[in-house]
Image 1 (cartoon, each protein chain N blue to C red):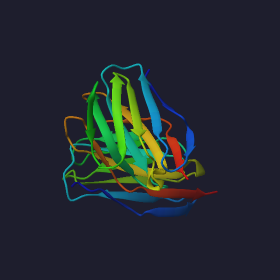
Image 2: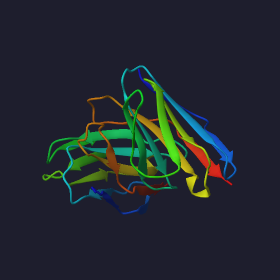
Image 3: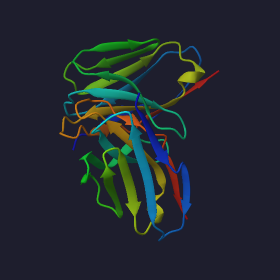
Length: 112
Length: 112
């Protein structure tokens, strides 16, 4: 079974601070996605990383895929209250139906 | 553009009653379809997935079932609900070749 472990599970920071969320596995994934979810809504896709060592930037968010494609990180610079939400990583199991294995999530709260 | 609908948005049902949750996708053909369940503030557990009409695969043994009567329609059912069936149910779709999944707004089910 491919498991994705996210850390930290909860994170509460002040507006303007930087933070990093980690997503780790002992298995190799062909790709990895990051989602953000707000209460009572479905997750929204933020980014997909495919190549080992790949770095993608989305405004103040920086995503990195590990060289061995077993881990990923999400770094947020100068966090804002609008960044508050549940962040989920998900690994592509490269099956015929493209099932994803989801991490347990990081609940981020950015205080004004 | 593609859109995904789920209904109802919320549902309160007594133990032992039947269940039917519906998901439809617009703007795409032959999507892969998925049903997930999410505990509060946690990751997503894949329940069922489908790569075509009438083709259903189950990830977790339980008293739930799924059906795909039409290309863009996915239904989650139960004959008799258990208290443990309470949760947030999410439907998602992906293209047959893509890595990314796109989620509906979810259904909050409370079994009393």
